Length: 301
Image (cartoon, rainbow, N blue to C red):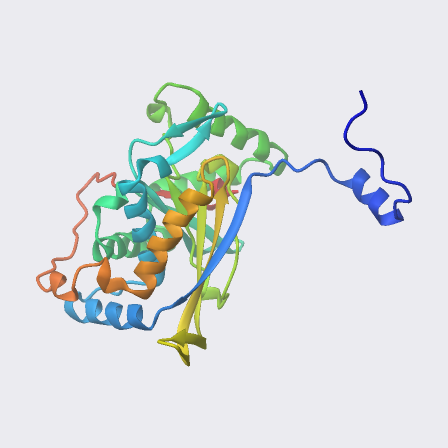
């Protein structure tokens, strides 16, 4: 019995070239973005800073929003291992950090463990302290990682990263004792592109991280927005997000979009009143505290 299709006749030259050039689609990536009116958020964050003495950025707000979403909806806190969807045991946020390297600008990152148990001020404090330590080259672990990785020839980098990825996720044994950290990049990634004056960007999913979501909060700018039936010039921010379709579909992405939109546009509905931090005391990291980890830039790619 014949199939329900037949070869298309009179193909153009470009169509013939394109069929020979590309493989069938096999990429599970979904891209999406939102444009937020953040006038109310900026006022709210200024009040928080006035009371607590801590500056909280929109990137921290995004990190807090996703942390709460993953904590309240454990089905979102997943990754793919051995062709199966696996649920993570804790909500951990990975925030990328721009820094100066030996060969120019570079990327590093900080993993904040159990980020869903922290408020926006605590998140901001931890990120600021860890990022400052990384940028100053005072993080012993990351400096040792960089030295080791700089000794590896580029031709060996890909097989080495694949080996580390396999040992990290596919081997059902805790290998922390030999330097192979368990789930080092956490549940999701947030990387602010605002410092580079980029309004909207999309990041690739990083295979070695097993993070199914990467969010890029952009630079703040003015744009016309509909407010109470009128067009007004408002301060807005866009955020591009990359999803792994194996972990999320439209229903899960819709849950995340509604919550993130609410946090950015109507923060007082879901975040504490700024007076909550009136008696805030700065976090003092304990010696040997492992609540957050830093990573060398080359482990990101």
